[in-house]
Amino acid sequence: MLTLIRQELYKQLHGKFYIGWGIVTLVMALFAGFVYHSSKELSQINANGPIFSSAIIVVLVAMIVFASSILTTDFSNNTVKYLFARQFSRGKIFLSKLVTIVVMYIYLLVVSFVSTFIANVIFNKMRSMPFDVFGNRISGMSFYLFLMLSLVLLISCLFKSNAVAIAIGIVFYFVVNIINPFLSIFIYYHSWVKYVPLTFLNVYSQTISPMMSEMTKLSLTEMRVGSIIWGIVFLLITYVVYNRRNV
Image (tube, rainbow, N blue to C red):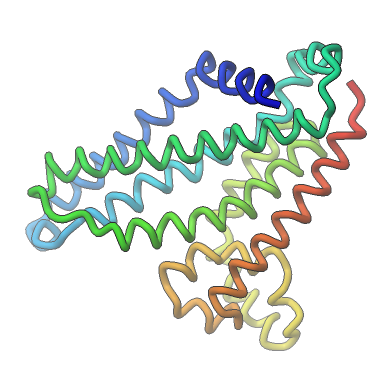
């Protein structure tokens, strides 16, 4: 198992994923800091919260891109035959990829912290770092990504295409706020609709804006539990599909 994890991390180090998205995260944080610094009104407030929020939005996109390809790459490059030849079970291979996703997520969160600190030094007059706000954002994003990436992994495995998974994942993020009014109407007339996965994709929004509960009709705890349950369901289905996929 540890061998598989080391191999996965080795591939990511040589793939330069961590460098490219790390730079993009830093650039986004610096851009957000510059925007707040350039405005007389905005420059009077502590912008570290919004700066960090801008950085982790990049993390969200990066993780969707990363997760969408981690299962399909081995099949497209035929490296999966090497893994099977060494008699690694598909379960262990699948689990090693999940661990790698978590490691990359933690890495990008660290980059977000560092980027926010740099932007704070350059643009934000070394104001205090609101760690309670950071923790709130990370909490909401973690539950959201657990559900979203489980769905992305399933889509990439079903369609055997990371491009489709990336497109659907990113579209879901930007479209979910647009369809929320319609979702609210359905929930009003059919209360069971609040338990569909689409509702739980609002877990990040509800974490940072508790008023979202008026739309979802669920408490934040219920949103988090639902996100975990649906995420596990999607992961189990993904594993079944992955385990039966032909080499």
